[in-house]
Length: 216
Length: 297
Image 1 (cartoon, each protein chain N blue to C red):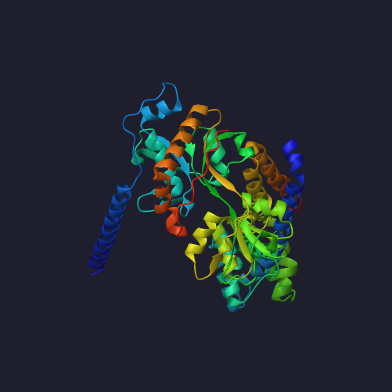
Image 2 (cartoon, helix red, strand yellow):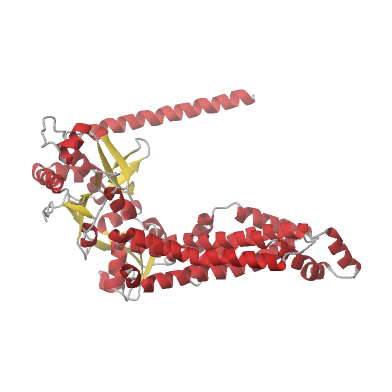
């Protein structure tokens, strides 16, 4: 316990970094993923093709490779993010958006076709139908898979430790080497840090799922 | 047609493989010609670690597999090569164990202590800096080499960095969890420290200008400079002392004394310098330094 309190500053700031990485990337990925899902069901073929291309590229590329490209590849085309933290958020968001998009697309496909037909009969355009009729119902059915994506994202933030972001995993590397005699305490503290994020998330996902479930 | 083409491919592949294996065989022969001598007629007090290892005829050594010049895995022979590896062979030789009977285990910075404590390795020779925290859980023989923290900069040293004090306000790169990174944090807080998980990423960032310097033990930096002499140069002004020791189980005083004897003998009879010349010395291009003084604490 003495050890934990000695390093509380580092552990606390590392935990905050992990949390803000996850939350910032989660929000960006949700927005981008929703746009992509809309593009994939749109009546415009180039939009569908573009979104399919994006999803297949990022879903099938290892996250570490995405990180590597954003950190060390972009400079060769003269592009640069303002900080290493934003680069990490960008990598996590771009990658996770493809999974959000696929989860959401399955939800859109689960909305009975009669809903969209009825909306069109009322004179709503594609965008209006998607925003006001289809997506609200789609989101309700994909709470569990989106929850999976979120928890995976929270743990994927650890890749940033290898790219100059001092998150919980980076703190683990630092403390493990400095405190050879306290390895178990270091591990326990870091695992606890992740659990504090993921376990309440799992609980919250269940609550939301039950509340918004469509009773058919 | 299809069949014959794939048959031709297979044949070509076979040729390539044959080429590889004969090359590997040659290398193995070359390295065998200058390995340390193996003691043949040795007696140890029964019950000691030395007697156990001698009777078993094998020793498990933890070393790094990714450190050019010290411990780097040769993918063809599947055995590590480097100065640490040669030191381990000297110790094994004194126990009457031939180099080919040594079992090599990869150890990284974070698992060296647990591997010794759990008995997964008998000794660790892995650019292992002796310090007091580590001495609480393991014992150290040696040191067998004194490294020092140094700075690597872009070729021509455009920022004019001559020492750690010049790092103030500059961005300097190291590896998370390493002793040099902590030293910068503790003693040069005005430097803007960036930490990756491996030094190759630091080198990438130095190349593209995101960082102005890379800092760690000079021997590691020398390996990086050797990999890209057109892009990097070493400042060459070590500002710490990192004594590399051989880690072993805590409390095994007899074994520690035995390894220290073996090291001192290799310092005197020149096998230590010869080991340096054919491993790390090839990379640094410098003569073997004066051997350090063994610390029998």
